[in-house]
Length: 255
Ligand code: 13P
Image 1 (tube, rainbow, N blue to C red):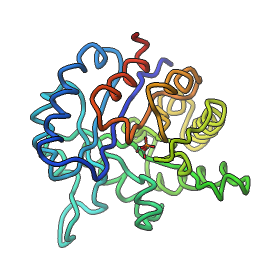
Image 2: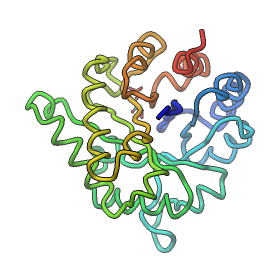
Image 3: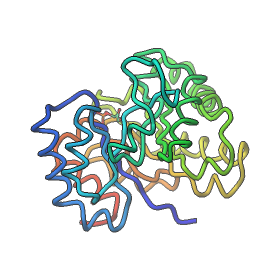
Image 4: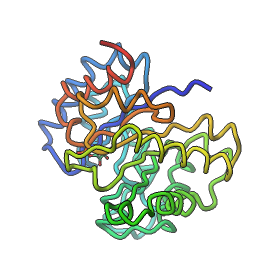
């Protein structure tokens, strides 16, 4: 099965209102030829979603960096799936390592977020990834599979049509250190076959598994050449329209 590549830009807690809108406009201005070939999405900070959605004009997807584990209620500071939809989002990140490790979000909690996103008609980009300590202890496989299984608790085969995965080794995020193509491919293959075992062959063939961690225009081509790498989730290099578009173009096979 041919998988349509996906390139996401995670803006994290960067930019201000004016620069976020300007970045959205700059991306929209050059995204058309690329977005015809691959899927693109950006994940701005919550307060700027409305302005960025307006700037993007439907050219690419806009998503939340997180979503609440509940549909509505007394959950101060949280943003629900339906609120994200109201703001024009069609997708959301779930389980980014800065939330798993930085904020202590558990697999159990993340499974509820995945459920809420899907019920709210948002696509999910579910992130998994090991620490340097895990990797050096030879635990990469166990760790990412544990995250995958735990975060997909209660998610059915039909639900999986709404889910993509991001493999983001924590030691490669914001460090300038990227997993080599062989290291990335090895984990992506493990994840894809785990989806096949847990769900079915069709889900495994269909699910997109993107790589994140210091992806740059200079290293993207080698990563995309890997059979099981279906795109990229970009942090730092997504904060400039030029480098983000360059990464997307390389992923789309454009010069
Ligand atoms: P960097 O590209 O800055 O390493 O960030 C990766 C990331 O965490 C994307 O979600």
